Each structure stands twice: as structure tokens, then as C-alpha cells.
Amino acid sequence: MSKSTALGRELATVGIFAALAAAHAGVARADDTVKIGEAAPVTGPASYLGKDTENGARLAIEEINQAGLTIGGKKITLVFDAQDDAGDPRQATQVAQKLVDDKVAAVVGHMQSGSTIPASKIYSDAGIVQVSPSATNPAYTQQGFKTAYRVVATDAQQGPTLADYAANTMKIHTVAIVDDSTAYGQGLAVEFEKQAKADGITVLSHDATNDKAVDFRAILTKIKGEKPDAIMYGGLDGTGGPFAKQAKQLGIAVKVLAGDGLCADDLAKLAGDAADDVVCSIAGAPLLKMPDGPAFVERYKKRFGYAPVLNSPFAYDAVGIIVDAMKRAQSTEPDKILAAMPATDHHGVLGETQFDAKGDLRHGVISLYKYVGGKQTLLSVVEK
Image 1 (cartoon, one colour):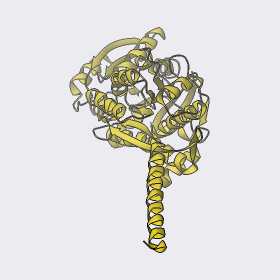
Image 2 (cartoon, rainbow, N blue to C red):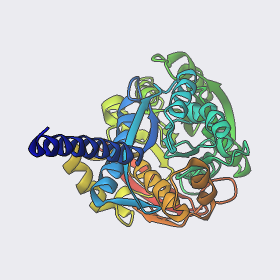
Image 3 (tube, helix red, strand yellow):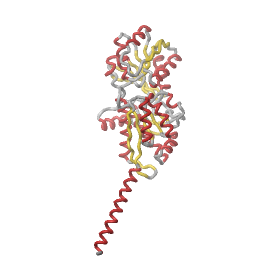
Image 4 (cartoon, rainbow, N blue to C red):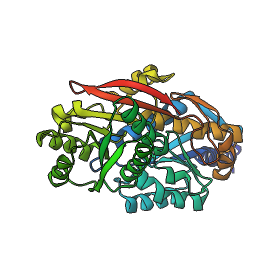
């Protein structure tokens, strides 16, 4: 064998080992990807809110990856694992199990209380942090799960704030209550009712419908006979908008009080001119009054081509809070992230976020709105 042939074979062998080393390095880099789960309804009547929630988390992950993330001396690339729970409790548990099986490091979600609460046990059993951007039912964090967090005020704050405003500012003396039988709508209505009674408001009735109803005339005809000063509706805008519209059509000339599920910028699309009869609350500060709100709006519009709807800044900060916990733990392991969460002191779009022992905000904010010509108009901001 000539020296040149032997040298050629040696070089070829070196090349093979180099290729294998490069391939191995590629695998090592792939091992440094970390999945962040997200769950919200992107189908069904609340899909536009769910897509806004998903967009907020997606924008945060894209910006973090662009800026570069290093945890424990390793360069980390976040991978977005977004799932559709359709706003259905059963599908929510299936989605939760899928995210666990996907080995996500943490989860942003779910959007609605009715999905968040049943899913929370699955995340708790798996030891995976769950940060809801929008679930307001107090029961979510009252279960004692160490994995459960939220970045909005609860209905135990929102319902009473709405009731206080009705009693003290609107001078409401009697009210009829209707809820959509969901964990969110019913929970908000119950908290409102307790405070309304404490404030001296007489609750004339409390009726239940469902979150797929389209015809409310029977309930509204009964309420019309009761002659309340106002009606409180617990539910989302998909049913609440038509509810307000049908109330106006039946000649019920009173305000409709509602929570953040109904308090959408484009409520007039569903309620028509009855939107101007609505007074509603949102568990959070107005976006443009948030510390980084105006800048967030511009970044969001540049990325998605339209303005934020409601939940996106909360989902955005939920991602930031999870990544902040990773940095403090110097680990992407779920148990290490979980251990770092109680000491959270995050400064983001929402301002400063700290949690109490249950996983609720230490300092919640409730904003109250009315509609003028179908346009959402701020009434007041209440810190809780």
C-alpha cells in the first residue's frame, strides 16, 4: 500500500469521526431546547380571546429566543407547545396530560376557570408549574396545589369591586343576577352577590343559563316583571352580548353589570347599541396604563398585524415569570422551577408581580369600564 493511499484512508477516517462528533454536538444542542406549554381555546366561541392569549405567550418566547437565554451555563432555546382546549373541561384535562407527556418545563394556561381548575390537578401530580393568565375563580388556588399560580386578580376581588361600584357610585338598590353555569360565570356571580348583599343591595333573583344559550327571553321576561335597578350577568361576551341586546329589545332599561368575560373592546359587535348599557370590570390594569403597555402594543401589532385583545399581556408576563424562575434556579428542570416560584419578584408589562402563599397576586388591580357609542371607556382603577 502506498503512503498516499494510507494517508487518504487516515484522512477519511478522521473525517468520519469529525462528522460523528459534529452530529453528536448537534444532538447536544437539541438537548438544550426547553418546551413551554400553553393552553387556551382557539376553537369555539371564545377562540378570539384564546388566540390573543396564545399570541402573548408566543411573542414572549420569540423575543426571549432572539435576545438569547443561558441557564446553568448552557444556551437554551425555548420551544412553544401550544394546545387548544376549546374551553371544554374534559378536553382541558386531555390537553394537560398531553403537555405533561410532551415533557414541558412549565405551562401558561389555561384561559378559563372551567378549564384551568380541572387541568390543575394533572399539573400538580406531575410537579409542573402552571401560570394562568386569566382564570379568576378563587377555587383554582384554594386547592392547595403548589404548582398553581395566576397573574390576574380573583373573582373574590373582582365581584366585590363591581358590587361596591354598583352600590356606592351607581346607587343601585335592587339587582337580578344571571350566570352561565360555568366555573367562571357562576363564581363571579356568587362573589358579586355576597358583596351586593353586604352593601345593602336587595338581590331579587339569581337565575342560571348556560354558555351555549342564544335565547334569553324567558329569563329576561321574568326579570322585567321584577323591575330591578340593574342586572348582573356572569359569563363571556359570546352569550353576554346577546343577553344585553335582548334585554334592550324587551324594553328593560337598566344597566347590565358584568366581569372581564364580557368586557371586550368590540362588545358592540355582539350587543349592538345595548353595549352602552353595560358596566363591566377587568381583573387587571388598563393595557395602556401598564408600565410597558404602550411598547407592548406596538410590538404585538408589528408581530401579528392587529392590536391586543385582552389576555395577551398577562400571557406574555407569565412566560417571563417562568423564565425568571429558571434563571434564579439556574435550571430548566420542573422541580427546580417550582422551588423558585414563591420568591418571584418580576417586573414586566404588568408591572411588579409577586405571589402570596396560595399563588395569587399580592397586589391585584381591578379596572371598571362603561361603553359610549360602543367604545370601551375607563371609569376607574381599584387596587386590591
